[in-house]
Image (cartoon, rainbow, N blue to C red; front, side):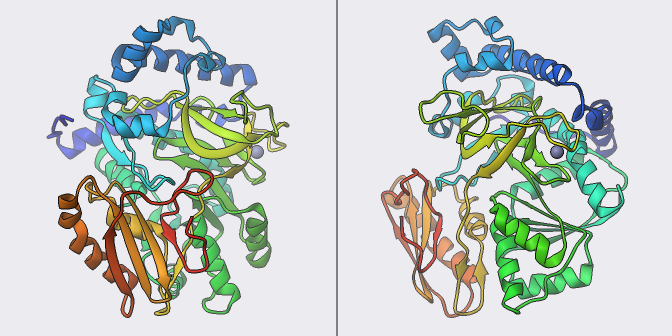
Length: 453
Ligand SMILES: [Zn+2]
């Protein structure tokens, strides 16, 4: 896709970015407690705008509209979205640019890749204005976090992720386009380092807030229980990307007396839902991303019934996704939350949870570390790392042909050897496909003791 260059001077860029944030900011905190009619009207207005925009500017939607003779003006509320067909990940993965708007917003959008629980990447573009507005929408979640941290600005925050993670790319973009005073003092830690090293960094930095992937938080907790590391106690723990079972969350809170919060987001929609102070279910950003839940019959599920999550991103004018099956399962909560927020809630989210790979050299490998190696190498369509013996792994790569496999083979082997550390035997082989679980998912990292499918 053609990407016009931005040669604007930094001060001018930041002026524009700040103006967008300041325009979007007023009313964000009040919105989460607004009367239902107000929230629904804001949501439906955005539904109408995005459906009309898509019909005019998104190739996939233009063609479908002509084919199926759906008049976009007939989609007036979120409830009308049932009239549009369900969009599958494979549809987007096969032809990602057919979902990107042909407007300036689409052409200048930033590309991101999903890490996909199916082991295949999907290309999703986010338009710049939507990304910047996201800073203002975050105010809804920041209110909760600031309450636990005890101060709204300038707190210390440690983020445990991998080099090249989506969150880093978004933050680099924000730093380029905005100037926000009182940003947290942030330290980046890597899940590729050992738990002992990260525990030492946390103790030294003393962050008020720690963010980690769900599985990494659990691994940290287990390592602390086993006496391997002290559990650093921030004012609040935040996890994302993978779910943590409520029982485990409760155990961590009980053991260390630290509140454990999460937000539900994905590369396809940066703002879907968030925990409030009560941590009982996730409040939906109803006006930013409309969620439907389909039961086994493919009908909209009533509260309390778990089903497949479909999202319609109401903000993004890069890749426009309507009724997109994101691959997670959840149920709506029936009752309003006692916290006073009027945004609807999801009960727990049952999404991807990944195995950590334990190696005899003491390293504990998070699957995102492996994904960090695969991500920039576009020849790799799918992959799976299987631990075949305590110190032996086989990396299966699916590539379009033999030649592209040979292009990446040695490179991947070298990067994996560096990631896994000394004494681990690494083999890289070409495969035609990697096995799926009964639920159709692919486990990207299969440790010893786990079933290979
Ligand atoms: Zn609440």
